[in-house]
Image (cartoon, rainbow, N blue to C red; front, side):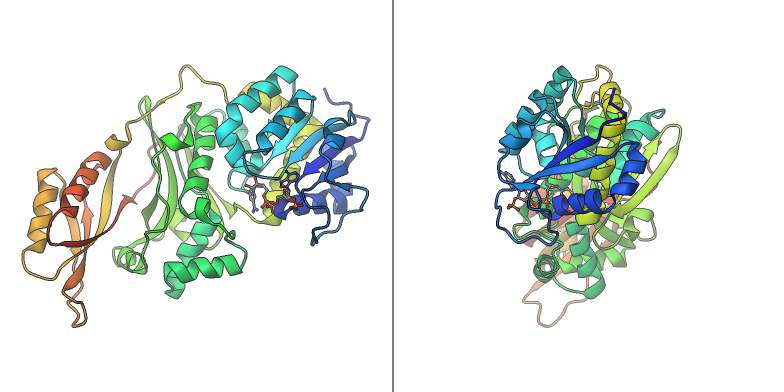
Length: 441
Ligand SMILES: NC(=O)c1ccc[n+]([C@@H]2O[C@H](COP(=O)([O-])OP(=O)(O)OC[C@H]3O[C@@H](n4cnc5c(N)ncnc54)[C@H](OP(=O)(O)O)[C@@H]3O)[C@@H](O)[C@H]2O)c1
């Protein structure tokens, strides 16, 4: 049990975007935070890599250090907030801090997705807790909601927009008619996308977050590399136009769907019906649609990244740790425990959906019949087709857009591979799942 009299002494590791937001809240809102925690929380050290680096938020110089040992060795520091990011050396550092008996608060989804299990084991052995609300969907309190507020439910589905950079890019492309490369460049200039945005746009960031949510919601332990994922790099402006024509928007969606004893998991740019809550999440915002067998569908929306929204989640975790709530949750939840009754991950090839196909084909008669023939052989029926009128400057090629009825990921993949080998196909385009309808509860 926490000593309710003493000041709780906290150290930060990392004083970048999120670290500075956390420092600002802890120092400028000390009175409010003390009220919420029931005792004073004092930031006494902030470890950085480059001591002389200019920072937007200036800390008293006595707090700033590049010596990690002064945190590890200080018995007065009970909570360490890891905000340096990355896996190495963050994993080694967090492990050492746990071994020295410190509770951890982190926003590091990459670290949790890779080493969460081992770190939670160390924490349990040392009687410490790890709190990680900010690691998934930033300011949206989805970890607490799934693991505490919805704990009376069997969660049956999660559909989520978990990467603000991708959602910002897709929103700009659609609303301002700018191509992918320009939207990405603008996002970088505005600070929404990092200098190296690879892990955001290729879906890695989203799939790592989905792996964490899967563990929390279903008890199913799955490494993020085992979940099929694709990013937004191949989405063309014309996909957004055609999707709109069909009544959809394209969103990078993380999906977990419980089907009996099996769990379907994937991350993909997905056509979402215009007017549905997920389709109306714009810009850098995130959203999570969770369905539970008792509660039905619950929708959360807010900023999934950025300095202060993320700091909001981190400081709430610090307060929970001081109050003792984090220890209770950590102990009862055992986030990285393998549950014997947990659903098994379904063969990705069995996942069922309607699909959107954009192909570039020769501009000549009977091409549609050739492609429909391939789809037909795989028992895939066509729901609708868009063949834009032939333009004079088309160089003999036209886009062909096909919406299929429900089929499996395996069947559509085999069909698109066969289509790719047809002489009439000039370029492969994209094949995206379509989400249309309420989650199955
Ligand atoms: N940015 C967001 O909106 C956001 C949202 C949700 C979660 N997160 C997660 O939050 C974490 C921090 O992200 P961020 O955007 O704040 O990162 P960032 O701006 O790159 O800041 C990283 C900080 O860590 C320090 N650091 C790096 N290596 C270090 C080392 N070996 N020893 C000590 N300090 C070290 C850096 O020191 P110097 O400043 O001296 O170089 C810097 O202050 C990441 O895990 C990220 O995934 C971020």
